[in-house]
Length: 141
Image (tube, rainbow, N blue to C red; front, side, top):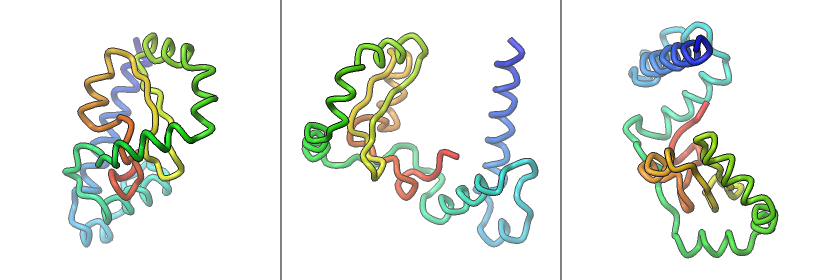
């Protein structure tokens, strides 16, 4: 499993770089160089998030559930998802994924997830109504 090991190592390095950079005082960040090996757009995204969202945010805020449901019912994407929903659900279950459809403002309108991911998704509000825009939860870069 060398690929999995490499992915874990890369993830660990990214988390360490994020912690060293983003959790540092803003003045200290501007005085020190960005972590080596990161693309500039990643660092820029981290900067935007650090200025907008506390690092302690553990879950997305939730939009109004009735409005979210009404938006999902009205969107043309609903018909498209309905056509392939069985395949999406099977892929989510087989691969341990979460499939989500959002509106243009990154509010989740619909999800399906494998059983392994269900509790984790609910714990961070990666559910219909979850607001996953950069201003609410930061970056996913």
